[in-house]
Amino acid sequence: MILNMHTSSAFPYGVLILDTHHMGRTHVVASYVLLGDEPAIVDPGPAGTLPSIEAALAQHDMCLSDIRHVVLTHIHLDHAGATGLILERNPSAQVHVHEKGAQHLIDPSRLINSAAQLWGDQLETLWGRTVPVPPAAIKALTGGEHLHLGKRCLRAYDAPGHAKHHLVWYDEESGAAFVGDNVGVRLPQLGFTRPATPPPDVDIEAWQSTLDLILALAPRWLMLTHFGGYNDIEFHVADFRERLLRWADIVRNGLASGASEEEQGAALEAQAQAECASLSEDEQAALTQQSGAIALSWRGLARYWQKKGATR
Ligand SMILES: [Zn+2]
Image (cartoon, rainbow, N blue to C red; front, top):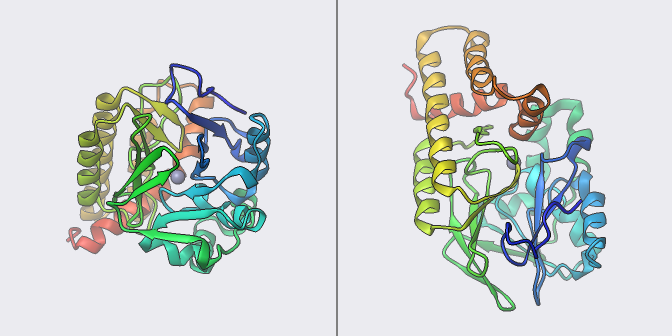
């Protein structure tokens, strides 16, 4: 379903938002299409929801073979899982990805294995069938590049924090910054963000620099995968930064306290619950689906502090 037409003044020019309807729920995983001479899809979403993308494209008289570029913020399965399937259907498309993630698109076995550790036998139900991307299709980037899509120019920025292979893409024409998961998750109409900090490479220091970078870009829009476009940039980033640091502190203090892992996880769970207490039950469920389980975020933050040796 198309939520906002590119003709709407309340949305970046020439950008379509597609709802992948992940697990049948709206507003969980978004994908974006950049219209123009060389149409591009930003984060096509999980492999399992490709039919939703095709249906949404069809509403605009487009199909997968019209897509010239797959532009990835990062390679997590909820963002990039469909890339291999798209290349099967459209072998001439180019894939633009951080160099630290490129290898895992070519051989997704490590990505699939680590996802299997997180989600067990729910893996395929949640994310579908993730297939390899042909190496010849891949353009590996470090950040700092300009990607010219016809008249449109996208600038790539190295943006670690949520993942070390994360890029932020800034579209000069619309002023939209495609930020992936680097400014958390948020439901449309709500003035409320939540961190998503899954293992293995959450880095709070790097993340703070990435937030500064995003502010310095002064985008007109923040385009979140989970979910949608927001133009209250200062509020959004400040709200997110505060919650991220608060969560990181809770996990650090928990590790130092000597409490059991169960008790520490429960403390973060209680914090998350308190923060969203004013939302409806349905909104709370959607938020948790967007961010992943709080237990997963606890593990990502705990791993960060343990790597830093900050827990003794
Ligand atoms: Zn995500």
